[in-house]
Length: 420
Image (cartoon, rainbow, N blue to C red; front, side, top):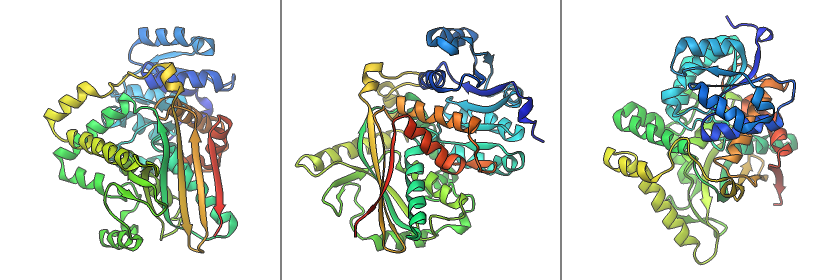
């Protein structure tokens, strides 16, 4: 039975504020949370929490500092029963996230994180979706660059098409038009953890490779045979680097394998409101100039090398020395140069076509993610959300409220109906 949220003494608790991204999220909450909101930070080291509070200053200097071990069930349960919203940046989540999710689901406490791990979200949904439904807890995974731009971009596209009476979405593709910034060390650590799991378990590998692996009811989704027919019907090359219909050189997007599964879960949780014929993919756009093909090929080769390198212990050891470490990140000057622009192009059952742009002048893996997670926490804590409890996606849990919040932070989220 959930504890009444009226009895709780904390509105938002941020777990992991002493990490690099966690500190950025804490700074965002310091600057943008209403003064009346009761915020606390939590971690394993009192000394580090004191140091962060002193460095952040302002309202953050007086936030309560709570000691918690995220792998201790009793400590997580105590934290959840005291809080209305728990936000965590402590990954890899498969190693450090389950007890917090469980505690929040049982206590009826809303929860947000930054995971991009299929296996963790699959486990979370299988174990706690029904529990969270009963208690009213909104368990919201992937509230950063994974996977808010993708999830909200498609959600806003489908909503506009519905408002126009243009029918359901069919072929829908996200193009990464611009991306400047780095992947956080935490994201790399999560990729590493999932690669290890896939190598050690055939069942886990199948779950990771299933395009509908996060859907709440797999039997209601396309079979592998139907997926193959859908791919064939689109035509064009299946090569990882190819030229699109508009002449742009396209290549894989590193986060597509995860983001696409989140978007498909959203569609399923919304009763397949995007449509039964909804088919979704994501690619990176390298442009049309003479060097575009070379950029696409070289970047794709690098991504494939990293992905392949994660699968074996010797090459993982080499990559561990080269890639960003958890808790590390670029300077403020480097982050200030970050930006991203993504475009969702969708067709509908009526033949109408739509374009939705999601963009921001913020480093996607750091400043941008801090804004997205911070605003997700504020939305869960203060907005009049209609979504019921469960293991949800950002679009399902916070829908238009989150889009409006991000627009107020300088994000572009705009949908246009294209001329025939």
